[in-house]
Image 1 (cartoon, rainbow, N blue to C red):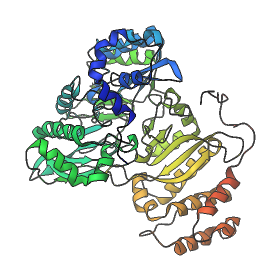
Image 2: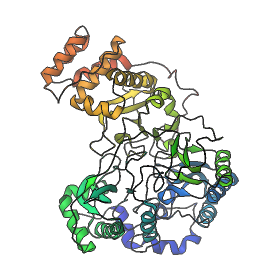
Image 3: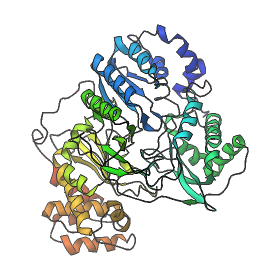
Image 4: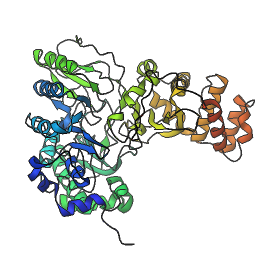
Length: 567
């Protein structure tokens, strides 16, 4: 069967987004059709046909750098129109609850501030991210921000690319030896490397929220990155698939033609020979609330309420930054960094425990079922914070919370598998995320929210018993050497017996028979054994339903969950 352009590509063929914008002033936001909704995303406006009167506006903040003055003015707009504001997992800002009558006015006012909403949604190069300590932290070797701005300026309002790529492209770059969070979830990641004694960047491509970017075996000097980026974008524009939307990312292009095939397309545009990769310079470090900078000053990490902000918070932060001549940066961890303090102290106090947790927009997004930021109340936040465990919480399988790039990952979903409850979370465990080695593996397809705290607390207790200081180190040395179903059954058996028996440390993945013997050594008396045949699948299903089937309303959730009819 002949391939057909997907629906969005057919709209692009009829009218380029840049031409659609010419009539922007005359858009009837109360009577949008499907094409309108597609085009509006290219200019930072999101709306669905089942929430016709509510809009989201997304603001690009390249490199996460924003002046206190603009931050304050955005807060003023949020106050004036009674909006909700959150930070995104790409160092940007989203404004929610925008009324249909105010969309155009707010859009104009935001874009007049010196920031832009252009290409923050849709088939575009999205907001380009780097580390909040770029150029100034003790681990910084190359300042990436000038390159970020080169790439940003090249893309914004370039008629060839506005909304015209086959699919979204996420770009990360860091010249730091150690980063606050990993960038291997990007379609393309320029990572600090060294070759023949010179610092530059290794290129990794094909990452996304559920996959890690792989080495392209390319080393670039600092001054070569921008030209490579332009060639990369053009190659994707010319050769990326425009058929099934499910297979149009860079990841799928590599699946189709291989990394060498993609590199050949890029080299044709780049017009220079590639150097083979250098040594990746990437260490894992813990970052505390205060971080000493190269110039002897300090940075302060202000933890947001899982990315949510109140305008009085913004005003307080902006005032403090202005009075003390501080720089403001947003991290992809959804926290705010203030740089340039003379002493490691700050009067700003956040009650949040979100420093190592990324949570998606939740019910502010039409794809999420639950208010994911509220569902973090089911997690043992104190223990997560104590051990600095990286947690990603997504509201759907699209993975905006990067749940597969963290120590413990969750997706909030609906379920009726366990009786009278609809709320639950799928759990992923043990990503080797810092160096982009592997994504987390699924531990449970669904845990009811009422049992989530107990389950995650046990996972942390098993980590504590291992004596490893870092969860990712524990995953690398213990978890990856066990099969997924063995781990699932081991955790369930501990839950049933109210024990905390450490996961055995193996040298490599063992046979099913060996894992069965390990389970029998500790849990021979349990009744799941009648469901063990040639694998543990049926036993996991039996024991999870035995432990987690509940009746009545969820007693942990206060206030009562409000159901949304259209979902």
